[in-house]
Structures are given as structure tokens and as C-alpha cells.
Length: 461
Ligand SMILES: [Cu+2]
Image (cartoon, rainbow, N blue to C red):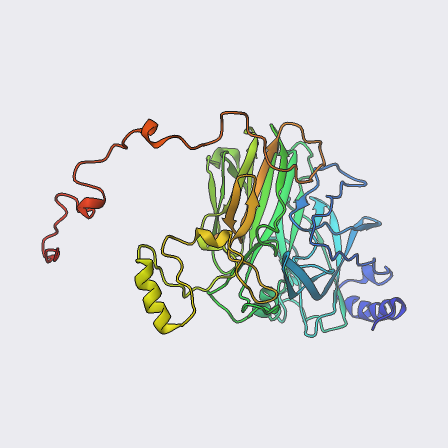
């Protein structure tokens, strides 16, 4: 157990090593490393001094406090084991920074000189790579290539000038398959020097990460390549993900980073947006186009911007529908349309006492209270004002309201739809018969005229 005194002594020893990189830090004491263990979004930190900017709100995350030391903005990251609540009912044992995964968001301004101390409290060595940043080669954080690895117990310092504004990430380049699969990552936001450049009223950020947990376990399988079952925004799944409250008419930016092993088409309902920023920089307005889904590739960042002109509760989610599910068996057979009594008979032979389900789809799983192992999550869950939402994973809600106060990120509750503007049941005879193309429909077996292909055997009906 390190006391604070031992910690500072240890730091001083590490600094002697750091002096080889830069003599400038040798005299500087290391700043405190703040810790946050709450999965609730901590209020964004407005700039205390220097240039004004709209601070970033990190979904289920927080911003790393810093201190000024002369002309340097100083931060302190501690790589360590963390316990992360993925959603109420499931807590994972992961690795992260300063008590959390993802680590705290680092926020600064273009032109700032940053000095970032990294203390390694992991059981193995690590490094920090500053993804997307233009910096001196020796600050790039690739263990073995650009620096020696940071051994357990050691503190290294990174120093560089923030040459460009934008959205970046930090993560290890040291046993990185294990360390990223264990949750080591964070967002790094650099605001433009000119406060009038692309200003927004609300600015959100999160990183997507994925995990494979065997049901009931709390450690992810770090060697998994494809078969993940927990898909997260900032290491949280629906209904544990913060909503995004915005005021009607606000210009909104959402910075979306991807450190999973697959792409995510992120879709926003009720609005159109443009990609304003990637990890390579700002997209010129002349090169933007309207869109409602943005595909975020692996190891990339897309920041979307839009005017929140439509009040309501708008779904915001990955459009791969398997990614809006929580831990589910991937070997489940499709029984839709199978007569339940036949299925029941077959099942009672194979597994006496088991229940046949899925013959009408799986929607009932959103409401069923099935027995689950400890520390796992139902596949789909969460309720809205109209019933079960039947989602999990990468799903949350952009809540556009007329009357939000700037800086208020509390969930404003369900949207009060104006009377007469919600889809509702009507009597079937009032709706009349739906039009149907002649020769189609259930009775024709979906056979379309002219569909017989040369070389294909006629069907055996
Ligand atoms: Cu996805």
C-alpha cells in the first residue's frame, strides 16, 4: 500500500528517469491524480482561466481536472484496476485510469502546452498513445518503438504542444490487445483557439467499447476477436447510458469514438446531421452532407453536428441490431412460425421441463423476468412511458426540450407529446382493407410472376 509520502518519493525517483526526456519537469512536483468511481456523468468543467469554450459532457464519465504550472497545463493519469458498473445489475473488473473506464476526458485548447504524468499501478507495463495527435515522435507512446514501456510503479511524463483542435483518444500501445480489451482508453478534446470557430451549445463525447463476458463472470475474455456480447457507449449499456438532454434550437455536437473491433453505424432519429470533425480534423462545410446515420470505423472518431429543432425523445443508437442487445446466446435457433405444440413435443423429448419460446418472435423477452446468473444483464430491457423499450447495448435517447437551462444535464423525464400526435389504435374496419399487389400475399407463397429463372428446377409445390 502506497502512502502519499511514499508515492511522492517514488515519483521523484521516476522523474530522474524522465529528466532524460526533458529537463524541464525535473523541478516540478507531480500534480494530484483525482479519482472518480461513480458511473454517473460528472458536470462538465468550464475553463477557469484562459480562453472560453463550451466544456464537453462525457456520457457516464468525467473530465480530468488540471493545474497550470507556468505555461504548462498539467494532468495526472493513473493506470489501474477499476470496477465499472456496466448497468445496474452488472459490475465488471476492468483496467482504466483514475478509478474509471474509460478514463477521464482530457480537455484543453489549441496552442496549449500539456504535460501529462502517467503513473502505472497495473500489474504489467503500459504506455499511453495519443491517438490522432500531431506531436514529437518520442511522445507518441508506442512501447519499444518510441519509448521504453512504463513498468509497474513508475511514473512517466509526456509533454507536447497541442498543434490542432479536434477530438482524439488516448490508449496504451503496450500489450494493447489485453489492455484495450480490459478497458484502457479515454477521450482527449482540444478546443479551437478561436472561440467563434464552429461554436456549439452542447458538446457530448463518448467512446464505444465491446466485451465478451461469459454469463455471471466479471472479467472479459480478452482474446475474443468477434463474438462480443456487451456493446457499450463509454463502458455502459442501455438502460444505463446517460440520456443527452438538449434545448430546442441548440446547436449540438456529439463526438463518437470507436475502440471496438467492428464498425458502428450510429443513427439519430428525428433530425439530420453532418459529420463536422474526424480524428484527422475539421471537415470543411463545403465537404459536408446531410445524413442521419454515420458509420464510425474501428480506431476512428466522427463528431456529428445538428440543430436540435424537433422537441421529443429521439432514439440514438447503433443500427446493427445485435449491438442494441445485451448478453445473449449467439446460438439461439429461430423458431418463428413453428407450431408451438410441435416444438413443445420435440423439446420435451430433448430437454424435459424446458419451455418452447420464440415461435412469435422474442419481444416478450423485454418483459419476462427470467432467472439470470448473478452479475449479468437481460438481453433487452428498459421501459419508456409507453411500455418496454426492448433494447440493450448501444442505445440511448436525445431529449430535446423547449425549456432546458444551459449547463443542466439532468434527465428531463419522458416527453409530453402534444395531444393527437402519438400513433394510436384505430378500429380495424375504420382502416379498411390494405391495398395488395395482385398475386402476392400469404396465399400465393410470395411467388412473383416472371421469377422462374432458367436452369432452376421448378418448385415442388
Ligand atoms: Cu454497433
